[in-house]
Image (tube, rainbow over all chains, first blue to last red):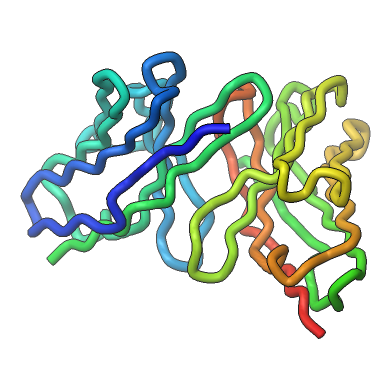
Length: 106
Length: 118
């Protein structure tokens, strides 16, 4: 199988831009997906196919891809965005998550 | 409204067995592949198993292969996970997750806690 690597933590002040990266050798060939998980809650899909946003997800959430790294960007961070964020990718028979990044809103 | 409701979790001794269920509503269950994803206390997400919409394709993580069995009943809109030979490292919240395309997880349940301890 393969691995996805995320920074353990990212901190930003309200209104600033948060960028969370996810690196993996398979990412040039496979899409990445991002989930937000708040304490005690189930994960929620916030980005699919590298940069697409599901309905109901605020426009401040965006995604991008470059080579072996994908990035989740949250523009104009709000207090409610404080959560754990996980990237995920898949091949034909396995699904892999990154280790997760705790976003702290200062 | 999409709902996925897991049940069947609890405390079990090492080597024991447990069967998890997931009841689905609010979407066309038979058109979605279904998955189990777990999260150990204080840890990240780990994919466990996947079953295609018609049960034709089934996959397991190496960590559970040979011990866990995934199944579904489209007539009952239900997903199952039979867990045998449980180990302490299987302790986690187990989520069922629906995938409209097999590559990612559109909908998640709230999870059920499985604790393996003597």
